[in-house]
Image 1 (cartoon, rainbow, N blue to C red):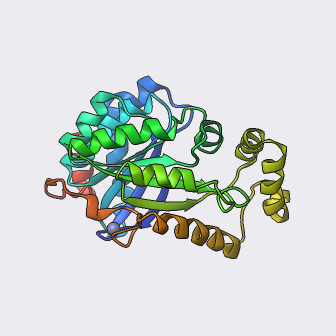
Image 2 (cartoon, rainbow, N blue to C red; image 1 turned 120 degrees about the vertical axis):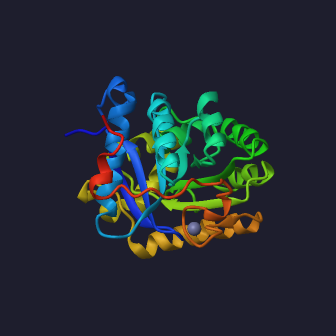
Length: 279
Ligand SMILES: [Zn+2]
């Protein structure tokens, strides 16, 4: 059965399990924006993860395409009324209705940024990503509304972000926009993403990235060794801290200290309650 959502990642936050959810590729907008289908899918997913005993306290909704804003609003409302904290993660400027919903339900917004140049930003975050200045402008608007905002910096790429002048302009822009909280994400380069990135960087820049991933390119997915990923993360962390920003301020990747919303009581979705309210 297709529920419209899929779990992209499960991690631990300061308060409990943290799910990263995205829409299933190929689902039509009509199907996933139908309120009942969407809520049923969420209840099922959350219930599956809570079946082992640990509560899901935080859910990040990853919005990639413009139509994702529709199901995100339904999901935000359902999760909030069931006492879960929601993080909206996107590389797109959000429509007004979603901004207002984020304020109403006390959601945190996590803006994905990878580079100060739009063509590189889009190569890494998808063709529908917006430019960093547009995202930072909305970040300031969100903050004025009282919405907590942080930046997900990445996917970080070896041979790009650890070269002089490649991450610094973006980090300075983030600091100038008065955003303090950052999470660093070292990404895997899938072949399509690698191809788009090399096209955006040109021959010289592209060559440097290829050189750094060469050892693993034969596997089909360009992946750094743990050591190389760590040294990339540390190089970027040095720049980020140098601009006075904070990495994972609460101790996890969910920016729990930005959660200022008055949350409704946690509602379990286990057992018979799983289908309560679902027609
Ligand atoms: Zn935390």
